[in-house]
Length: 263
Image 1: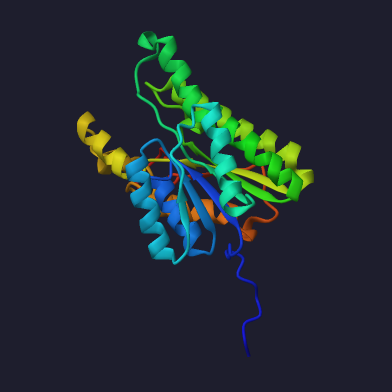
Image 2 (image 1 turned 60 degrees about the vertical axis):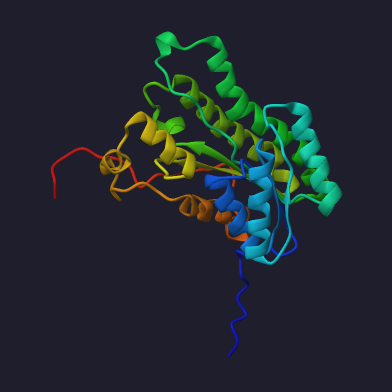
């Protein structure tokens, strides 16, 4: 007897935007969404890197992946990203606000410029893209938004007061977006990412002299995560498998560290 159950992860006919899509979690997410049938638009500042990744994703998925060079800290460029997506595909069904990052430093020495830069990249950019894409999602009465936060937004991180508070703000922005736009058929969720071995993270760890394997021993799984493992969580939230989930933050971090005796 044929299996008549629907494939809840099928994104055929849907259009997705992934910011920070040239490397790491963003690139892995764009590839996975494309493999599940979505037409994908990727955005980042590096035009050459972005074009190469778009070609790679399109070839691997057998579909179209559009590269739109965008500095998400610039409001006008975010507006143009949404316009280019609509010009190319005519609709927007999924928005993944993945672009983010920071430079760590102690609070006592943190300049105002560094504080503002963290909020511009990790919160303000998501606001720009959500606002612009949301207008079209509201009109079509459907859509899924996934914001990429950090475990720092849940637990904090020393040396990252600016980053942790920005990511916490992103999580609350997600919850309020879900509450206001749920009646329009739009879901908004968030993933809070732990120690993940993306290309740029690995380079940064080397510069800082950090042993990621040692750092990960405090988690139950005792290893860093991979970009594709985060992408799987984003795919879930973007798909019909999460059709009754909104306003939530899912930790993808290898599990909570816990004190006590060794067992």
